[in-house]
Image (cartoon, rainbow, N blue to C red; front, side):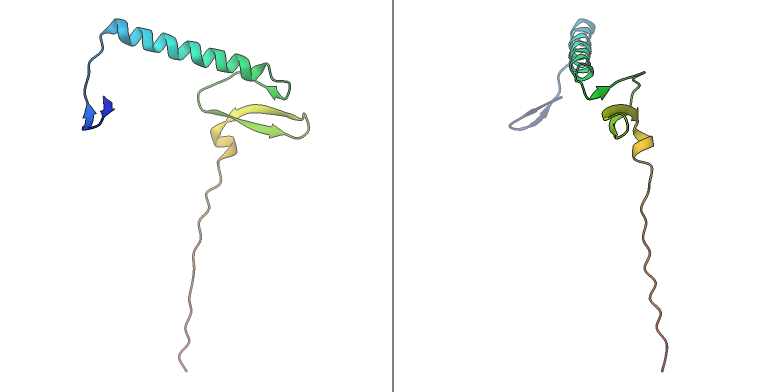
Amino acid sequence: MKFTETGLEHFRLNAQAWSGIMAATAQELEDNILKLSSMLDVSLTSLTDGDVLRWNASSQKFENVPYYDVFTSTTTSTTTTTTTAP
């Protein structure tokens, strides 16, 4: 699908077209990872899907870590109101 002035328009791609899209996407990802890993303050090891960068103060570098190692806390709040009769 793609957006047009009148809404969404469906279109079909054959296997060769999808293969080209996937190859271009893979190349773009590879290029960006190479650029990122060549930065002096970034240390990338054993990349997996869902990794994010987190600053490591002791090494003074960004390191890749699983998403859930960074975003694990869930914040919930409750409010209790107590009323006493006179």
